[in-house]
Structure formats: structure tokens, C-alpha cells
Length: 192
Image 1 (spheres, rainbow, N blue to C red):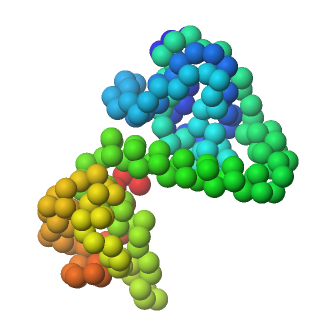
Image 2 (spheres, rainbow, N blue to C red; image 1 turned 90 degrees about the vertical axis):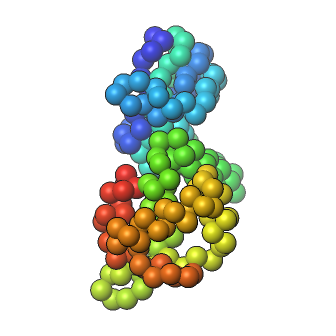
């Protein structure tokens, strides 16, 4: 029925839905309202199959825009079908699922998170251990302008965010190597 929530972002994938007929809105819901729309899909279409293949929680919320006809497939049955494909076909399917998931996460991040949260998430994703005590650091191997473009912000905004993170003691150092003295606070800021 139109208006029915079919998927909730962050929920574990137990079943996959194959939309046989109808339209579904994908995006980010806040307080049961679709506040940030990423797009609309129309059946036939597998809804969030990449998340199921990768064993990850749903990346988006999904709400029926029209009445829909669905085929519900348990994730284990879906995985068995995928794993029965020829080895090269299965690898291609998994590579495509990984790429689609990355693009979806980036789109959701740009819609639902402010520049500080996106920057914190990027730093955590690129962090590497630097000592035996559990310290983390990020080596900026790309120009700041390139990183800002990846985050969907202006280079000046990226510099401002780094300055604010440094003032809040969430990053340290300068130049190409940034220390992350408080990864837990960064995770909280990033919403992870």
C-alpha cells in the first residue's frame, strides 16, 4: 500500500524484496517522514540487494510511493542463488554490489550529515594505527581540494572544519599527517 515503509536504514537484512510492480522512494527518513529523497525505483527491481549480498544493514529507508507487489526472499536463499553463479559472475556481482553500496553511502552522507560529520567520517575511514597504544593517524595523500570535492564541500569549508576539529582537540598535527587523539568522539560526531 502507498506510504508503507518497506525498509529502515540501519536494520539488518533478513529478507530481500523484489519489487514486481509499483514505485518505491529511497532516501533518509526523520521522524517517519521521508525528508531526504535519493531517488525512486520502479519494479521490476531488487530493493537494497547490495546490502544483503555484503552482509551489511540497509543503507537507505524505502517507502512505497504507489501500491506495490513484492516478492519476499529470505537472505540465505538469495545468497545461495548468488553463490551458485559461475565464479567470475559471482565476483562481478559482488564488485558491483560493493561499488553500489559505496555510492549509496556517499549519497546518504551528503544528504543527512553536515560538513563536520562528513569530514569526521572521512578521517575515520582513512585512519591507520600509528603505535602500539592504539593511536590513529591519517596521511593526506590527496590535495585538500580533492578531498573536499569527495565530501561535497568547498575547499574553504574543509579547511574551516579541520580548524574546528583541531580546536575541539579531535585532530592534532598539521601538514600531511593528522593525528586522531579521540576516535570515539569523532565516531560520535560522524554518527557512526
